[in-house]
Image (cartoon, rainbow, N blue to C red):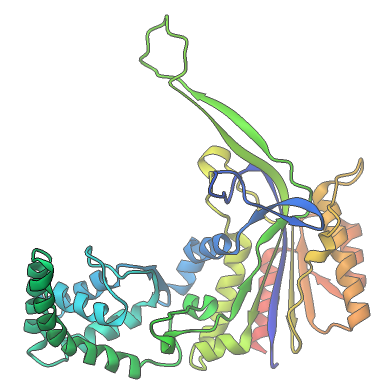
Amino acid sequence: MSMKTIEFHILQNFPPSNLNRDDSGAPKDCDFGGYRRQRISSQCLKRSVRQSDTFREQMNDRLGLRTKRAPIEVAKLLVQQGQSETRAKAMAEEFFEALYGVNDKGMTDYLLYIGTEELQRAATLLQEADDNTGAVAETLATLRAESATLQKKERDAKQKEIDEAAKTFATLADQYKKTYPKHVRSVDVALFGRMLADNPAENIDAACQVSHAISVNRMNMEFDYFTAVDDLQPEDNAGAGMIGTVGFASSCFYRFACVDWDQLTRNLGGDAAAAREGVMAFAEAFIQARPSGKQNTFAAHSLPAFILIVVREKGQPVSLANAFEKPVSPQRERSLTDGAIEALSQHYDKLKKVYGLNGKAVCVLLDGADKAEQLSRAGVVVQEDVHALLTNLKQTINT
């Protein structure tokens, strides 16, 4: 099967929570369909997937790092290869200074999304460089330290020495860039992509798109007024040791993500087996992972009530968010979640009929024979449980 996209549509109801907050500490929100909705950002959801035990255990050594500490990690690798700590630190910092810029703490100026194999490649390049490279790095470290204490005129003269010595690492940086592979081994980098303005050769087009999760219902934000009491205060002091408020809301979220199979395979250098493993790890993690925001306060650890996976052989991915343009409300005999599943099923059925959408669709839902019948009419195969759902997906992408 030649696959273009794999879509994930999830409905998940949360009790009072503040899973993803804005700069004021309130739950993030947005306007959709003319109504305020609670929101969980795409970045928050992707980090929840990347950091989940499910994803990390399945991908194991095929994970990247989002960090400013790349020079520190490369220095550790150089020490393991026999360099002294002082020389290793100087070599790594000068190399990354030439590549991206390094601050006075020995870290890159901005976050890098980098695979462990890329750190190893940098360490190997430095280790195999000219024998004089380590000495040059230590000299540069000394020159930079001296320059920081000088007046401007003397500092300008010292800078010329620094620039001349730094050419050694500029050459190594150019060599690193020119030999940079067009693909990566780290599955999360292949899925979520990266962009480096300083070195476009390292850019990776994301194979996975994740939408901001929005509530299917109208948002009703509330505030919890809380106090903390000093356990050792005198009995005649009735005041609180601390007073505060925290915003929260309860919502049923629609979550959507899609994976471009062809792009993922290209990013992994044509390794279809790694791409399959990546899709399955992402699928399970996207279903299971939850944001960590204010969980110690609210413990909002809910699982999805509905999961729909659509594999399309051709065409663009299709979001079903417009099923909730009009907010869903609970009715006397119908819960908010049931109403959301009904709205999504009807919208999906309409899109299939009007646009003739292709795709193999499978789903799982917690309960409701009536909803299963409606989904079946829309051409969706209803599975008994999440294990069966994921098994079906695995069989499809193995075909």
